[in-house]
Image (cartoon, rainbow, N blue to C red; front, side, top):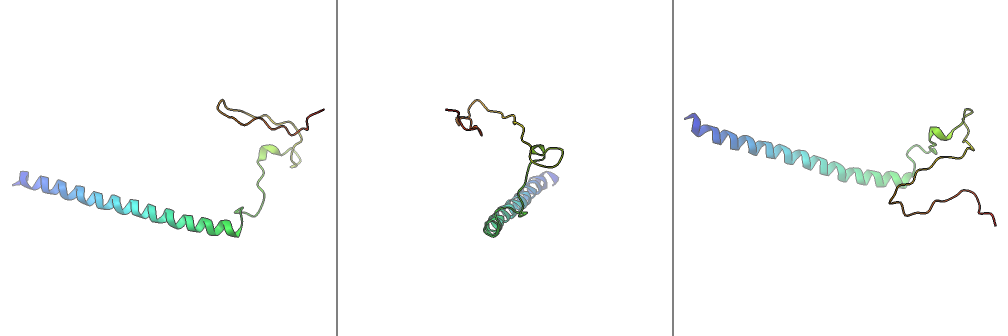
Length: 91
């Protein structure tokens, strides 16, 4: 009797788990769709969410002003853009 009931119980549990998984995926899909519409609404309102310009802390000196020091840059091997210098070329 128990050997006939176990396949039915297994099939029922797999079916219920599939329903739960589908519900979770649909909730994620619908929340992603609603967040896209919310993001487009926020972008129309203002580009920066704080309304302030954000400066990375390493660019500031001891006094809290933007530093005038030369900054170290890193280039990767597949980077095809040529480096942009802030200085004007001497002619």
